[in-house]
Length: 407
Image (cartoon, rainbow, N blue to C red):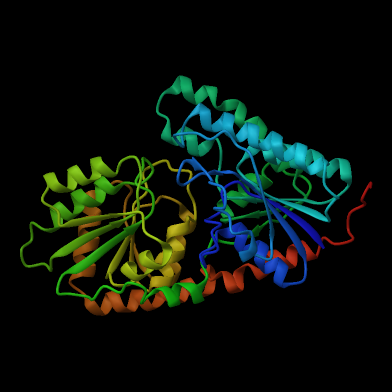
């Protein structure tokens, strides 16, 4: 099969072993004997700058990689970002009509304009259109923007995204929560395939000794990911402040791995309360895994009202074999924690509840070990891409010959 994958948020394309969802899937499809082209952006979303000449190592992949122009934007939540995505999506549309017609188009959502252009292209060519939902727009923006007037400005995005959802012949998403959202408007299919973002278990295990940090007498609490408005780091800092008033409890050091617009304010808050805290900044994946594996407990602090569901970090948390303290409201993730007995669910934004969870885990090594074993089992069963992504390949292959091509 000839397959086009459209994703403007891929991982690094420099030839490193770490691959984002769509590059990993592209390579897996190539290994299965298919011809795959992945259309990406020339703007690096994570670094907020355009890719320099030669930054993409085309020879490192079996997938054909095509980078189309995007104007770029300085902030994740901004009208410039919406405009930038619009231009990129328009360029995707132009590009598709100039190419040999593929057997299937597989499109990451968001972005939205690319989704609409791709859907119209597939309809005109009589080929299947598959969406893979990574996030819910405008819900994610509305949660972050408190101004009601600005929230109303985002309402038209709902129309856009519904058009993309309605056009999908098959639906894949990173959580069942997102599947339900798509199927609420899609009448073409009754079922969706949930495949968590996940991680390559083999790569994770190989990275553990990359820059290994020896354990010491202090317990280590770890957070990985973006330092922005959706992540309630202040709640964890305040919980640690409450926890450390009990002098008989083991000392805890908070290791924060990641970067973002609120990093400085989080650092100031930790310093004000006298929290033993290390902000590492952005780390390479192997370095992050190595440091994470040297810790004792992990934390998933998500603010109230977040549209996030099964997010990327929880896959690494599970594979690390560490118990998790979770404040995320998402029932899907809370149910996983309860089902696998791999952590403690706390009330969202409740620093005293988090402090009690810290107290429970810090003073019970056997419980930490038991929950850690369960967490690793969750990681292997639900988050290891080597197994879970085969379902996506099977779904794509099942579409061959089922649609009438008009060309």
